[in-house]
Image (cartoon, rainbow, N blue to C red; front, side):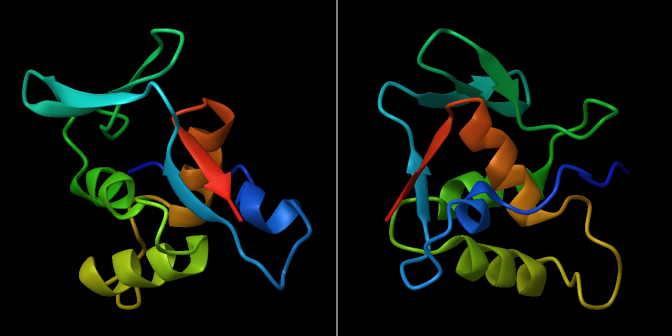
Length: 113
């Protein structure tokens, strides 16, 4: 399984520690099934499959996108996913903060303060 190696979430890089970012789906982004996988369709028609490197559905990625509803901070999402997927006991499939950062760069999620 691939581990994301793209640094901390954009929320941390934005420099507002007193008001952490709360990710949510960007305007015009749709979620839907493509075969047995979930996909996010970006505002410019870009497709982001929520799947691991082997193309298998990723329950962890799906859960991160589900939790990114604008009510939780990046850290709250990371803790929830870590608990749900027992990442304290074993390495996680992905690093939630980095995955949120990647989706923000792809304009699938926006980080609101």
